[in-house]
Length: 190
Length: 190
Image 1 (tube, rainbow over the protein chains, first blue to last red):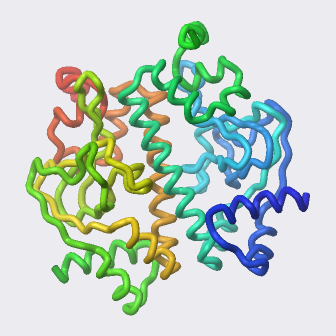
Image 2 (image 1 turned 180 degrees about the vertical axis):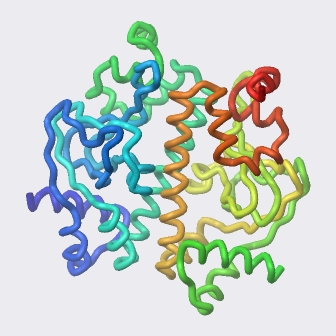
Image 3 (image 1 turned 90 degrees about the vertical axis):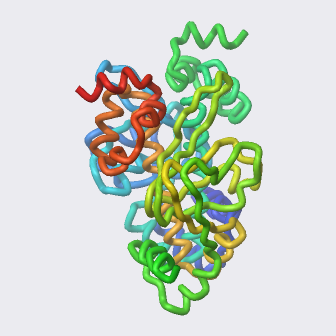
């Protein structure tokens, strides 16, 4: 467990500097959780108590439309943060699902804890500022891709950006992420 | 001009508290700029020196695809922040356009200035953290809409969220935002 906390501290320190005293204030706010493949981290209609930092494993966040089709918002692997951020921030019931594609381990942080450490430790406020800003930029690029590129071009983009992730994600989920059928995806691969 | 700086301070203080001394450190980093309707704030291939806070007016940010079609990423009005954030953050040439739908006034903040005030003043780090997080949430909701809703449902959503903005935006631009023709949009309105 000490090792997992070490990984988390290292993740923060890739972006900001922390003293030992600051880290001792931060660490107790993170609660360890372990889930098996196919278990849910977040389910629609349920409260969203945490945002999650992935220690190990692989998850997907997705919505189900009125026709029952699954639309994948995000894949998340080691060192990714994941939640239903709208529901988490506004303390409303979830509107998306997050479940595990592999057995996974997480650290959970409540909204109250996040606000508290951001107010107490300026380096942490800067960490989440930079992380949120990077997340915002990634989503802006994804919207531009959705608006301007074909599914095949978006597949090439994904291969270039996240080659390691793609090796771990089943093909049918990549198809759901791109919004195409499994058959169409297999044509791209040639 | 004093009045414009007052508006900006008020905008920060809706989210965080600032002392007069802090404000005196912050304000000189913001440079005033005024543009006419149709003038460009950002053009593809050019450096992106600033992010912009809109004092008054209305802008759109958009990409042009390989076929020459315009895809609107965002409309921005009073109190909105706008930039090509990918290019701004990485100090790369712009890949989108931002131009004025109305005569507009802005405050410009360089990346160096933003980092400097965030490091010096924890309240400002928290301000941008919360703003970026809200922006991230909005984009996540927009992606969910793009993935799961029809153009007509997205139009209804836009009407509910931003009724005042929609009154000021020409119909052909709303059609470009939704990714439908002007004719299709006019059918939605019934």
